[in-house]
Length: 308
Image (cartoon, rainbow, N blue to C red; front, side, top):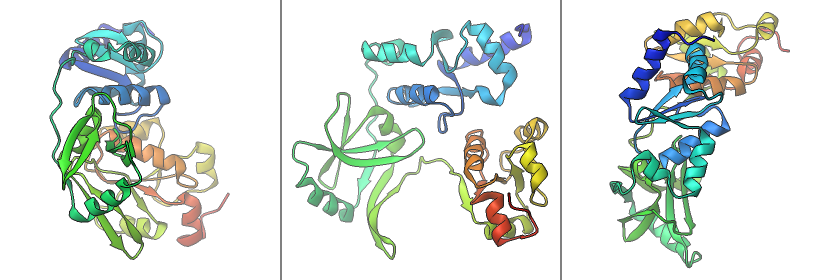
């Protein structure tokens, strides 16, 4: 496609307004391809803040960027208004030890996070340390706020914080996401395990059983029921009140208030989970996934809906 002057100016405004911009498939919290996930992981290890733009949400922007950057694939990274390259370039710079310098963060000191380990958790960890000679206690927080608590080797660039007499190692990317986190150990009716409370953790997609979804749809301020199946499947069976996520409806959704509650559904709940995470990444704050999809709905709520 020919790149219009208006689109060229729009792209230039984005790359000039932020020191580091990653045009990617998906969002920082929910990458939609392996190359984008790899790029996010490398940037997260060095940068607490940078801008990401989901090219899947805007086909015109996606096609325009290919001409603007003269680069056919995504992700595409801009630093200081200049195109740097894709994931392969980042990996090459990382292997040469030059990535921090290229991003302009070489020598930048990462703030030590405030991390609290409760007395109960510390007691369990100390006992486990007896079988971890030569290893350090590591706490990891991924870009999607998945947690890892383990004994492993110390790594160059680790930050070390103390709590309850324990030393905890974090990589720089985890450090800024972990600030204010509390690690507890809880014993309950379903067993015992570590419980992590992190004030930085974003909203997550919430699961709804068909019965819970029915109640919400019948209540005050009912959510929109978004069907992400194919038009062929839509013709076979549908839930009353649902809307098929075609291009026109997607355009409507993207123009809505991000406080609009959304329930996503598909055949068995897998595709809808991915779609729900995508819209959560776009800023919608109350997002649900129908567990088991329309098939579970037919089995437990409305047997008049055909199964296929």
